[in-house]
Image (cartoon, rainbow, N blue to C red; front, top):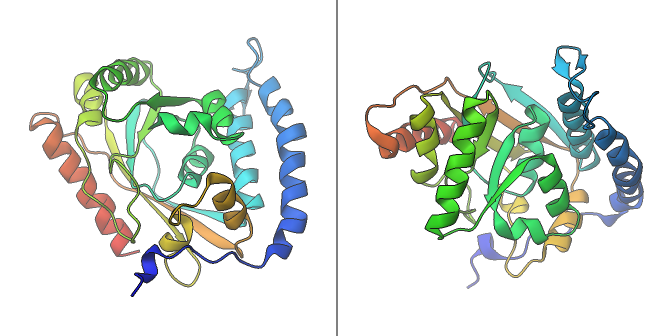
Amino acid sequence: MIDPVRQRPPFRTPWRLAWRVPLFLLHAFVGLPLTLLCFLPGINRIPVAGMPLRKRAHRTWQRITLRLFGVRLDVSGRLPEGGCLVVANHISWLDIVLLQALWPMWLVAKAEIRAWPLIGWLAHVGGTLFIVRGKLESRQKIGRRMAALLRRGDRVGIFPEGGIRPDRGVNRFHAPLFAPAIRTRLPVVPVAIRYEREDDLHEEFVFGPNESFLRNFFRLMAEPPLTGRIMIGEPILDYDNGRRRLAEKAGAVVKDFYDNA
């Protein structure tokens, strides 16, 4: 008997692609160049409604991207001011868009994403730190870069589960990338991500067996309207018990949010 969780998720009514794909292409080939203009030195720091122009344009582009996938953003809680380490559970590549739509931040992602069509380039331009999993040298390099960004007052996000689980729920958080928060003594902010309609849509959003990125991209774009929830916990300032204990505390908060949403 085939485990139903591991079957390839169904492809929803494709008629939504008839209007979502052309709008996404317009968003990519017209909206993106206009957004990148706002990254230019000299104008990128102009304040717009309390945010630098670059961040305002970046967040707006990501929020429109979510809408083109039929995702309504729902946020509870708020991020603290200044530098902090955002730690979230991981369900889909769309988590990156969801967090950037909350607030433009540096995100640590697996190096393989850099080679994905369009999304890899967008991730690079938008501020992604690509890490080679299993390579100590890469982890140390990214850790130093994270610490520098945190000291500068930037927000940095990580997905410390170390991969995406096929069934719903939150895995144990791995500790190594918590070290920059301890080194800089800046807050760790636990964040839970869920995609839902009447129920949790975890299985629909993860990659199916042998599913390519492009198939997953178009399958998600064909989904009926849904809600992407971001639940932000209180900052954790526990630096004296080591990174493992810090990871356990943050993971427990995210798991509680996810399970009781």
